[in-house]
Amino acid sequence: MFTGIVQGLATVTALTEKPGLRRFTLGFPPGFAQGMMVGASVAVDGVCLTVTTLHGSDSADFDVMLQSLSLTTLAALHPGSRVNVERAARDGAEIGGHPLSGHVDFRATLAEIRRPENNHVMRLAVPSPWMRYIFAKGYIAVDGASLTVAEAQRERDGSGWFEVWLIPETMRVTAFADKAVGALLNIEIERQTQVFVDTVRDAIDARLGALQPLIEALLRERGLTLDDVARPLIIR
Image: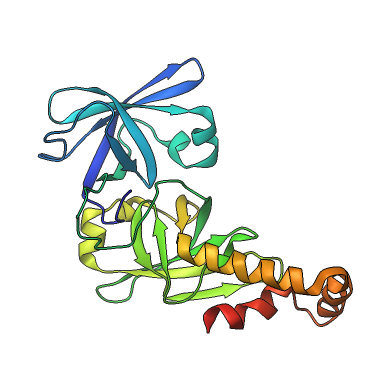
């Protein structure tokens, strides 16, 4: 488990292609790998990876299989890329962000950046159907960083966008300063929210039964979906 509190910035120092996987060598900030062992878990831009080889106290190898490369942003990394890193939380550790599994759900596109004084605002475009799990004031993990959703808007097709506001300290300790409009970012939704949304939706489906197709057709005529009906129940 991880907490979503980024502990440092690592740099990709080498890439090695292997049959069925790609090996990443990461250089860590001073002290990050103190006491680390082969087999340890590290969140790299929000993706849970396993240490396969240690190079002294400041570098390690990680093997990433093809499926993870296809589902996350790791495939786009190159020597010199900076990534957010966090070591697995220890028992009894303070959860400064929110509990994360390190399992990325989808990639969002950085659609807009605004820079009000002492702030950095990112608007991220979300593909369908993931907006059903994203609410203003809720938690979300972006490249492994636990953030609070400031604003969110859902479209009828289940896509949409959300915004997060980053303070200077967050920009200092993460790689968000490297991201330009059009960049892809790894997103892990908050699991308790997902369970609650899915439970409410399943209950509605069970209640509607054979009437569901008819009701969905009526809602479509009015530009609505069942998710729109369920949303007030979830927020409440």
